[in-house]
Image 1 (tube, rainbow, N blue to C red):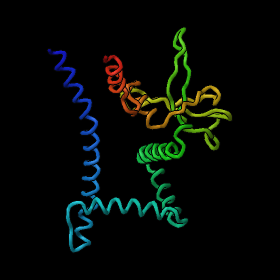
Image 2 (cartoon, one colour):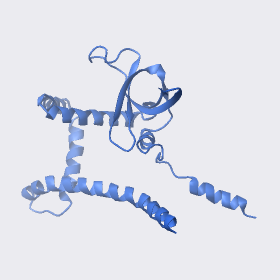
Image 3 (cartoon, rainbow, N blue to C red):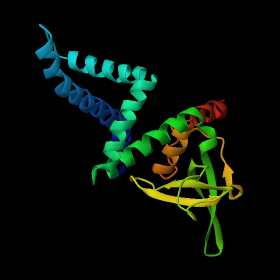
Image 4 (cartoon, rainbow, N blue to C red):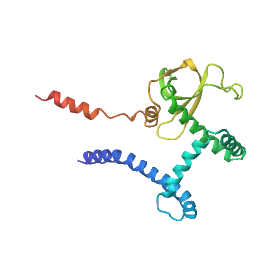
Length: 213
């Protein structure tokens, strides 16, 4: 009975926890945008209602993306970016976030080619690790960091934010026909999830019917 109750509770928790965490993250981001832009909107406009700050924040992001298509705004943004990259301490955080967003943008454009399998040797056993190609060109970087025919592969660690970056010969990796989202879920959940529909229920359901007289 205790095992049944524990299994039932964990099943319900597994179903509700991702929804709760996702909704909370959306709520936190919306609250942050409202707290930042809300007072500004209230000071500039003769009217204000909850949610207007969030709407203005979303509009500002879209406007910024539109303006950055113009050369003048690209130059201004490049100058501001240069200042951020020269400030001690700030440049580390800014550079890390910028590199992460560049990686996400590139993988959204061509997800399948980013996912690869890397073969490793564990004693006398050969294993494979899932990785993501983050760089194929090392031009302009320090010597011996990477060369012609080599690529940088990020190897994520399961159930935590972290991993390793390996510089490998391009021919030593095996491309995987898998989207970035599915591969990342597979890696961070230790292979227990890919974001694909769970067919276990349907399989069991079909078996039940096939075994029925």
